[in-house]
Length: 201
Ligand SMILES: C[S@@+](CC[C@H](N)C(=O)[O-])C[C@H]1O[C@@H](n2cnc3c(N)ncnc32)[C@H](O)[C@@H]1O
Image 1 (cartoon, protein in one colour):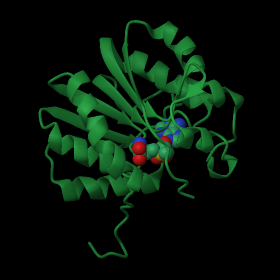
Image 2: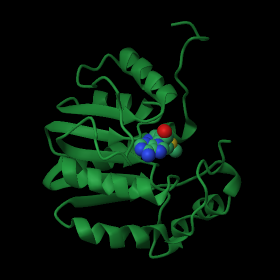
Image 3: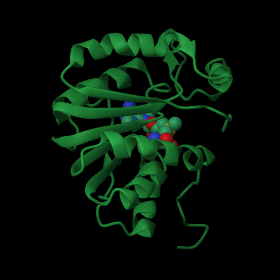
């Protein structure tokens, strides 16, 4: 693939967070089965995790066509037989292209999307996962209304980088999210509190 036609971006935040996330995934994911990743972005996480978790099938998804092209290119380069062809999935849609999964992974999505996407993720998780199935979330979330790092607090104030209109719920994000979670108690929620260190736009 020539450099000009290569659709793959490489993100510093992925290089930073993929190993700590993998450590958690090794502990919380089932030993076998299908992992559905929502909002796979560039596909770097999918390629990295699929290669290191070879007993799991990894299904990357994205609503963005450019991201889908990047994921497909990362998949080809990775050559991991357990990394499936990326599928188009919008968390807000009532019909997902995957009906059943053994775990769901969503990294750095719900803090930048409208609340409807967050709700869509939960509803989709409920439809797709079996009882006790793991929904793994990673992001720069607050705990009990407080940020876990100064960089996250700075990010929260940076309206310039938001891809979606700023909504007030984001400021007390995990509090709101946990309330929503109460409606889905038969699933297992695993949350990693990530760092937002740099403005990328
Ligand atoms: C900050 S990026 C994170 C991407 C990747 N998980 C990562 O950590 O690099 C947020 C991603 O959410 C995706 N996204 C936005 N709205 C979405 C929705 N309604 N359903 C699924 N994905 C969505 C975007 O296309 C984007 O790739």
